[in-house]
Amino acid sequence: MLDSNDPLVALADTINWEQFDDSFEKYYSNKGRPAKPIRLMVGLLILKQLENLSDENIVLQYKRNPYYQYFCGMKEYLPTLPCDSTELVKFRQRIGKEGVEEIFAMSVSLHGEDAQERQVIIDTTVQEKNVTYPTDGKLAIKMIHHLHRIAKDEEIQLRRTYVKEIKGHRISLRFFRHPKKIKKAKSAMKRLKTITGIIIRDLSRNMSEKQLGKYQEVFDLFLKVSDQKQKDSSKIYSLHEHHIYAIAKGKDHKKYEYGTKASLVTTMKSNIIIGVVAHKKNEHDSKTLEAALKSANQHRNKPIKEAICDRGYRGKKEVAGTTICIPDTPKKRDNKYQKELKRKKFRRRAAIEPIIGHVKSDHRMQRNYLKGFIGDEINLLLAASAFNLKKWMNHFLALLFLYRILILGTLLEKLKVKERQKYADLYLIWFRVW
Image (cartoon, rainbow, N blue to C red; front, side, top):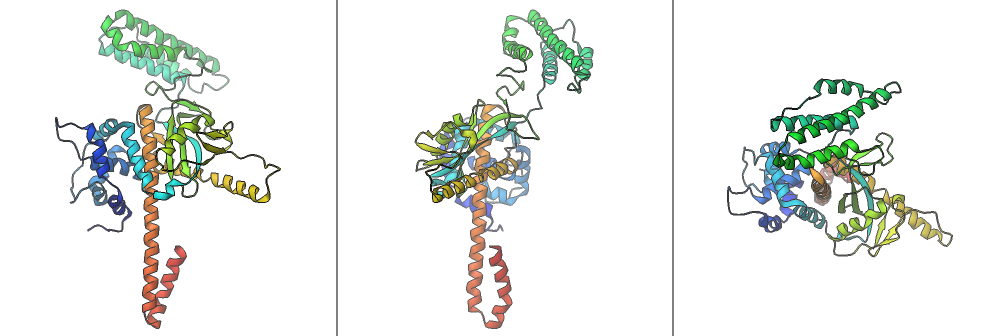
């Protein structure tokens, strides 16, 4: 009943699903409840990123869409949910970064020789984390509420909870940038940090050694957040995502972005993403080149000869045998042909910017909802995989359209003159669209 020319059906028939069964078999045992089919779980992960859906929505759309079920290996339509949405979380944790890298490698290999170009383009962007905009006031109030929950769970009676006082300080912190409210906001912030320390000491005195060992890591984190200053280099911006850092990309509408820096490597002509890396530290772009090129070379048979970058990569001429090209003033020794060649090369470098935009807006890299730094790596790899697969599907549609034009042209030649005139206009319209 399905359209065999649908790109999702064609993609399902092209992917070698058996390689995932062989690779991920080691993560399963014969004990307990029978596991869901590996093809089903991998297919759901790919569809989620392709269609920009959440875990909950992809499970629901699978039930409604027979094309999704065919892609995931079903032979007949089943009007039931394939699994619970939390099973996708467990599956990502099970296969980890290594398993997701295999999915990404498959998305690169589908493009064949197009992914083996010697020239590549490299750029960095920010993968923002799903955290609230960080302020010292927000962090302090969150820490106090968390300490109240600990006291309730451990049945410890605090000397004072400061609930009423905190409400007043929260109001004082509003519009803290206003010249008339700065002094009052600073005083409120100082008092909130003091309250945090008081409650931590109160809890520590009333806890046994076993309880103290259970919460010592949390207390140390809260004290570190309370003591941090405005210009500290390793500030904590989120209590549940410690690894994120502030990145300034020079955007007028968004001065700082909070997440991790990500490097993308694309081929120069075919625009296929062949390498992605998430960086733990906010390093200068030139220091990210080695990791980016290493990731790209893992999925290729030929080494990368030349990497074209923007001026943010100053300081590197060559990395691991790859020449790094950065825009510069024309040299006197260059002839007219060489100058024109460089100009075209660096104009082509701008092609990576819309690719980054599409990966963010269409494939869930705009805001990362997966926990921890491992979540940053997994989301980045899946987003790049979805972009490559979408590119393959668009290429398939273009070839199908061309094939139909050729078929129509062949038929027109066999028709009589009057009948040929009837369909000639349609042929011309299709040809112009192509």
